[in-house]
Image (cartoon, rainbow, N blue to C red; front, side, top):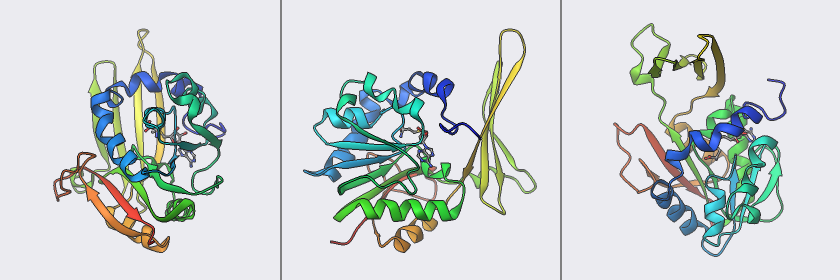
Length: 246
Ligand SMILES: C[S@@+](CC[C@H](N)C(=O)[O-])C[C@H]1O[C@@H](n2cnc3c(N)ncnc32)[C@H](O)[C@@H]1O
């Protein structure tokens, strides 16, 4: 990947808000904003992988001072187009290592974006970076899927997750290295296909807890979703909160 915008270049950025429209309605965002605004309190919020401001802009509209870090100029260019986006501070850089000024009462990293860091070392660095930005008592929040390995019969590496007449999408897992990729084949009106593949590193809830501990954070909450439903053995994703001891 030679594009400085990574896997979220201009073409992806241009389609991003339309493709995430169902996750961006007031009904979908309400519980997310309730949790984040509650943790922010009277302090500031920092979003790692802020993207087009899907969450940062409405959080800013609630009166929370928000800053975002993202490596994609194409994605962050869209923040200003949103109501509230003009109030969001932006730093272009790698959220595993980039420092911004000041301290925050909440740092958050949503929509599986911890998995965009494709090594364990980088994921640990991300926790350290979050902790370094937190005030005592501040919280780091991650929303991410539970690795879908229960869908893999022995010997199989691939799980389709979207099969349509004009395209299909599938995840490929390497259970030895925790490398995975999401792959998209789209067939145009002319019958020709385009292919896009994004590399990830899947990560277990307990492994995240250990990364938090390495970074000096301790577990505070783990839910199945933003409404606080209990996390169980059947949960396919989680929202986890760690806090920096006061
Ligand atoms: C799936 S999008 C999520 C955007 C936004 N948080 C949301 O929920 O809509 C992932 C974002 O993370 C950014 N990103 C991925 N890896 C990154 C890294 N190592 N450093 C900074 N940004 C990164 C991408 O550019 C992209 O904007």
